[in-house]
Image 1: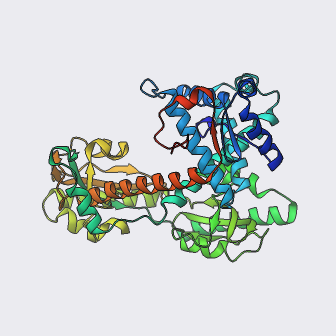
Image 2: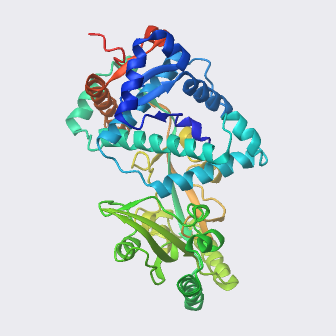
Image 3: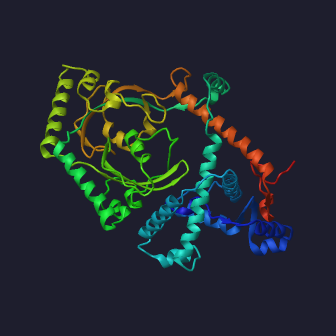
Length: 460
């Protein structure tokens, strides 16, 4: 993922420089020479910023044929406004996270360009890798600020059932959305059991990592890079997104250990559903914690794997022979706690109901159930997830709903989501209108002729 999608930005670091830029806007000749296209609060937008944004989007294969330069420029102005207001609201940036993100981005780009650092520097018109890193840091930092500010604007926006009904009733009948073919899908999962010996072996290995770090000066980040089985954090040396005591969704055991540590301390090994961990608390900033971890999973024996395979084969035979229903078999035999008590039915994470729209279905799931007739049971599928390296499952389609016009009762959750999105858009529009009015904004030259959705020109 190219870092330029966030947008290139230059920060004016102090009030004197802000004054100098604002003064320069009065002189149109100087503006053209400087290439300053706009000023938004403490940020400037250069002509080259927009050129770089377009180049990055095209490099990623984006189709810009129907997008005007004015629309892209308006998008840059919005990002600057969010970042500016985030600074005013003292939104905190996790510097370690941003630096690790820069490392990932540089390595990712170099992997695509076969290690051509010189070409990368030429593309971004930088004379050194450090200069490039400094600019990427500012880009990511301000992109992060913009994203956090937008989250803050819509945080807490909710819709009542009456608002959902009003939203639906105000849609003309001939303009109501059509939902595609939907399936209800169920599965039964059998997971191989881990032996106590395998668990103890992992615990001892983690204890060894801890001793090597504390007694021999080894680096926690290096251990995580080489040994952690958490693919999402290992390339960052085990660094996780900033943790906050107010975060509602966090693995209970992980939360308790992390918040019991002192800065610079490493935990003893402990278990979660994901495996066994040790945690290093790197830094505490008020309510925010910078944490690294190493995850190891116990090895599965061939005997345990075969036992699980034999079990699900027998369960499938019972269902196919008609001796037990799929739902009853799920309640009796499935190891997946999230679905077994619902007869194996899967919940759509987007809509929170049991329906999966065929055209929006996860590719992996679609591959596993394509071709199944209603009520037919799939062959045994070997799979894996974030918690289990190996699991076996069988799947079935329990119901099918053909393409249909939105129905308030049947499609309530989908309509609620549309109503919420509409309300969030209106909240953002209201916020933008108020903040634009209170922020120093100046648009230069040809960009004054653009027809913006927001009042960037502050026309009364």
